[in-house]
Image 1 (cartoon, helix red, strand yellow):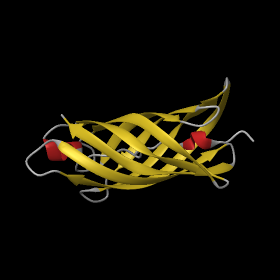
Image 2: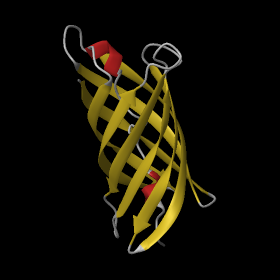
Image 3: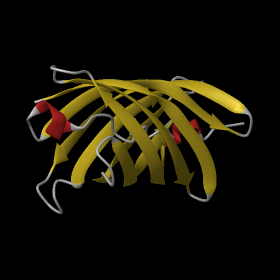
Image 4: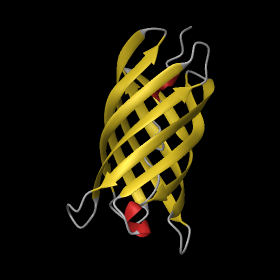
Length: 151
């Protein structure tokens, strides 16, 4: 069975990190987690980026993520969208993109939530996230941790 493991937009992924805490509007992170569907769980790794805008008192960011689901065959997910920060360390991800598995591409929609801890007096953050991806009608869970840096 071809696993729809792709969904992992992890965005962190939801995206980890509050760039404003580091004194800048940019945040980059690496992500490690698990993508699961139909009882199958696959290791997922990726990178992500967020630009925090000045809209609505710095509550809105835009971001992108690239992830690799280490399955057989492997899957690649690329997503982009909004990152909403309703609380200082809390974030909600609304993203859209594509998954690619063995030359087949599928549309991905992601809704996620995450929380970031900002290491005091540094630009570093550690975050956790849970994302629910819809890949052409099939639900996929993505969860993990990210380590990032604001600049």
